[in-house]
Image 1: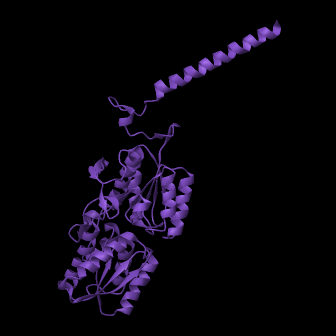
Image 2: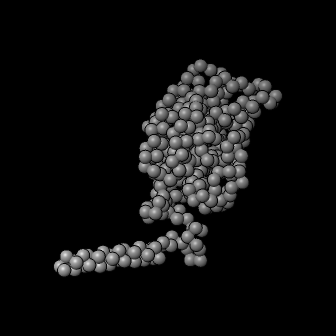
Image 3: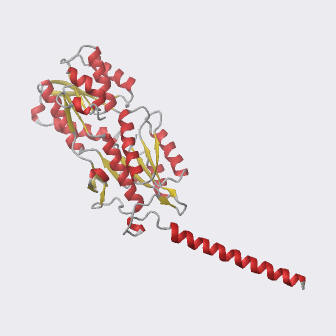
Length: 365
């Protein structure tokens, strides 16, 4: 009799506990399940930072080419701003050296961390493919920005400006600066940088116009987006080509390094300089006349646009196909367009910085 009574008591207590658990689960669902929804909206209509049913924020990673690059720091800042606006968690990574191998290691670490999205400015268009396709196979949304990976390695690319416009306008600029005659050189970043190489190809196409018959591109040098090496490469160009009339540096590190060399050697007006630079770094050279004018876009906006694109990829509101549209916060509505075998989102045209406006812009970035 005692054994029977004990069994009944155990059964009653077990049923009570089960009922309590079921009640608690139901309460949590009704009270906490829609916490991210705005008034008048269903949960599916709202950007939800929670993921995997755990209440944890979604993780958005950005990988730049290398550390110590002011342009990259601004780009990552813009990405961070966007993701924080959207309620996500930001992971910012960059290797010490601008190599594909170093970026691959970072990608593998991010895969292990089970991030939701990876935005990458690539050091090589093809070498990252195995790591990035592995990430996509694990459900991670992958996009490139600034320097693209190949179409198979990404869902979409965020392009800072039309590559053709960038390449052609820089040749047009140096043409005006040197009076249409003389030897010119290009000081690029790494030899594998997709954005640099695309711009240089458009420079060469622009040079095919008969108007440039008295101009000659004597060399493309690579400073690897490292200041010391860019300084050495500039000095090498001046030594190897004593009749050099102009340098185009389509890299913020390179143009600042070239500006310093030309200043230190007293070559203002003798060797002209243009390219892509940060206003804050190039102001002294524009104000002194070493660089009459240059171009760029806002790297903060490049990162910001990538952040909103990554969020929309994670939410599933876009997939990276042509015609996809999304809102990019303060940048307004954007559309995915064709880009060779892949797709891209375009930020806008390059902006000209000269002595008239550099004083204003050097305070911005």
